[in-house]
Image (cartoon, rainbow, N blue to C red; front, side):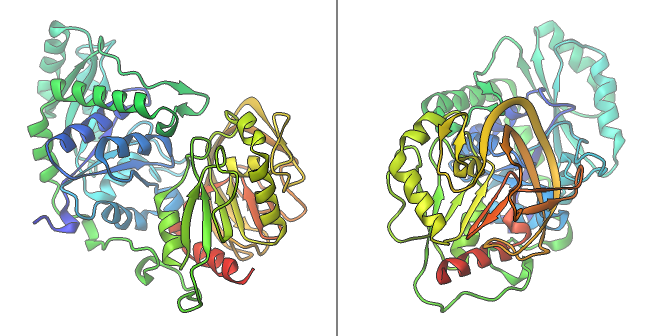
Length: 463
């Protein structure tokens, strides 16, 4: 039996975005799963959408590994948590292999995560406009950081058998084996819109077909035996890390326990097509803190789950479903009533928009004295934040790192009691704290500060 700390693993990376790593990574996951392997899917960075496709490919929860949001020290433990009981793990990278948080060196890059996991890297190269030059590109990536092991190359968008032969010949001198070649004439349909791929929840049947097409492409174009052998040669993870466990003191900061405080409070978590952005660890932390976590769909459910004592509304695309969300007036009123009662409400990005008076002219919950609208401007980047005052989610002075990714604007951008003081890229206050509500544009990963989940559940018990 494979030791938990030596699970076979691969990191799928690329020289740049748009090279095809999502297609290759998802296809590999599905292809290995079709071989009867239990495959653990992971995504470097904060992206919520790719893990949905990974979950579809493997039948397991897609999990993120973000060294900026969670800290480098949690990468291996979170990886092992997700990979429990698996035969093999595939980690999809982010952007280019060596691209990380702006101005932070290698922090949050695929290269850093690969080193933290001691995992070999498979480099996906868009070969559509080159032949012999591919050798210089691969040589540069393989030699840039001696701590990163490029275990093989998959050539993408290859034009013909002759083109493939030229590419393979050029790469012979690099010492990096070619583990696959995918033809450019075989596109896989994965529709996008203003924030990237359309989530699985919004196109389930079509997404199943897309993942099947990715798997077929990989099976026909890649040497799966060689890729599996590369993964099995990874060895033990560096540093002897133990798996992360929700509520475990090993990866936790001190906080008052809620055990033994009575029945489990119901925490309702928004889901469905409009609210698809959520890290799996959040629900796990809430449950470990003593909550009963129940998912509801703001598009279709007219009532909150029975006995709801707290509400978590994560990210997603309310701007796409503004009309339908507005039309569900009974639920909007139920959310407002819960918020006005002082019950804890944690809202991030899409949740912030839903709590506003209106979104693009459509009435929303009216919990916050603010309006939201779509714009042409993309707001994107990591943020270093500190809680300005006490809230149901965080005590004043709590530091967390977050990520913004949206094309909407909320006016005003902060309430009389802001949620966060943001220190990057410029100093400002952001978000709203009102009654039990904590609403903000920032996506945060609670594994970095598990006390927020315990604090939230404690407030649910006492509100």
